[in-house]
Amino acid sequence: MSLTALTKPWEAMSYGFLDGSAKRELRRKMLKSVAVPGCQMPYASREVPMARGWGTGGLQVSLTLVNPQTRVKVIDQGADDSVNAASIRRFIARVAGTPTTKDALDADLIQSRHRIPEEILREDQVLVLQVPNPEPLRPVQPNMSIARQMHADADYGRMWLQLYEQIVRSGRVMQGASYPSLVHGRHVMTPSPIPRWDVPKLHMAKHLTILSAGREKRIFAVPPFTRVEPLVFSDVPYKVEEHGALTCTRSGTTGFFMNEIPRDDGSSAFEVSDSEWGVKTIRARDGNGESRGETWYKDGEMPQ
Amino acid sequence: MLATPAPSLAESRDNAAFDALLWTLSRPGLPRDLPEPGEQSIVPALLDRECLVYAADPLLMPEIMRTGAELADIDKADHVFLGAMATSEPLADIAIGSDYYPDEGATVIVRASLGAGSGVRLTGPGVDGAVTLQLGGLPNGFWKARAARLRYPMGFDLFFVDGARVVGVPRSTTVEEL
Image (cartoon, rainbow over all chains, first blue to last red; front, side):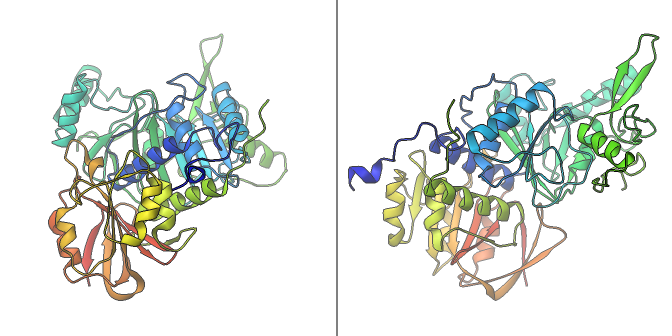
């Protein structure tokens, strides 16, 4: 073997920012996380020019998957134009030369913080979710070695106990986001802090979802057509947020997840959380063509 | 301000190879195209100095050695290249990880012929209902040997390579011989 075989031509920066060994490790771990849905796989989260906890896990997955043809959409709490989303989108485009979009139907790869778009994703799309805390057992077991043992034993009794205590204390399940869900009937995962509204979108979906926690160095996945069942008691059904009847004050769309905006008189106004859905609705209302795709929720209800 | 880096040929090939592997492992039984025929493009996409590799096919050795991966016995290896299999005995020794760390279960790459030979019915995550896959060139008792080793979430994940076609069967897939 010659020296030239071992070296590469000089580059100012690797394509997609991450070096080859970081990408290969992420690839190996992504394959394993797809093979065992919902099981948290440890990985060596690399440094990226962003603070840990701001989407570095999702960013590393996106940078590994992209090529110059991948159309990228980035959302933060449903919005394409918030600082976090805009910075990540610009960074990916700058280091990987990818085209970007705000349209969920137009995107090949969607990196998201805390929301899943309202339009149904296709089988050729990949959803990357940023995860701050990947361990659903942390509130009931702070010791992560013991938590790992509990996952190995499928010992999830304390998760139900936690839900039971919430029902006894408050009359309902208080878990708003990151609702613990059983994947493929085996591993309980946190679906990242998406609202309860979004969890049923993961169940038997057509797209691949990869969840990555950069600060906590763990990666897990929900392959297409995989059961994702929120933990519930048989006599206390799973409830999504009561947003089905709310109307967006800006676009007039009804039956989607809303942001509540407090007003001076104590009342609230609502704006649709998926900002691009709102934009498309306004465009259709103003007669600029229909670009809206089919949605998971119909008339504010998720069809069974 | 840095110019946007362009992907090298090797980078594009690794990216395309991994895209095929991830897609087919997420949808067991549905084949995808690798950028090059055979295992040649899988090796540099996944392997480096962190890996322990077992290869039954000596022709793959130069490609594997170039990645810096260490050679290991089959029961220690995290990536196992079995080539064209004559017996299903090697499956008995492949690492399946532990309940604590299911990710230590090996990735196994086998040569087979797609669309010929006996059929299997796949169900499980990634499969919409059920999918039938025809795989030829596998030794007798292959699927029984696999089932004997699987203790979900422990197990190994299979890729079958036929020329540039690759099809994945992860450990989560239930296989029924037809």
